[in-house]
Image (tube, rainbow, N blue to C red; front, side, top):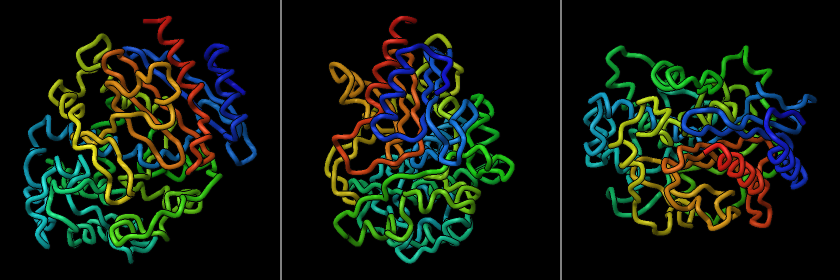
Length: 377
């Protein structure tokens, strides 16, 4: 193990390893100041995890895509209550003209699909996927049912941002220039450069569980394109930078994104997100069953979750269920912000856990972070 934090964090990371984790990093910011930056375990490639190890963060990437849309809305380039098709006219095909950015961000667009026939080669090509997403037939009118969009979410937001960008940049370049670098997130990659590949931890562990089959699930998240090590270890997929799930980062960089939400109006506020953006993110949508996955997902109108899965239940009093903005990633990755405390945390790892409610390798890590934060508040 290596860590620059205190013994409580070290013990919690050892406990995570004892629960089956392979390699893990945790980072936390309090009012914009880094208070925890620690790591433990192995990369899966014969090396110990260190402060520079990168981890695939799966759907935590959706928080980055949503954040980029918020930045463009703040600049007056997107109207999040207006139709996606105003920025991207082709998206209106098959009756999707009434879908707003708010519907997409809250996973209530009625059009969560990419197409059950999507191939890996197509998945890795931006132009192909945006054309496929634009051509999808919705399952429902917008704002009728909750239906999580595992893959399409990022292409809808990303292509719309790309279409209105005054400089005509690619979405990946926009993200780098306008979000990652201004926030000091140099070690968050959407589209991994080949020269950074040696830093990436190898994913292992469980494959995604088999869910009850449905037409919507297969269209939104085809079974042959699983959120699992078998797909997300592939160099071509890591290079492609899928806008909903392809982020590769350190915990430090990931927590930095959430710090920009946690510090709005507080000391350390980078003035990156406005109070209006924070209020949108904090507004909950209806908490009904999700018709893609079959269980409730507590997403807000800004694209962020209102619970931090895997750590909320362990914290005394369940305080992480109040005022938290988060996003989870397949297999247990989680990052969150608590604006009332000015706290942000990210836990990234390479051993995927699915469908094991009795296994919570990160609860003790979250508790240790809280102890450290409380002493510095």
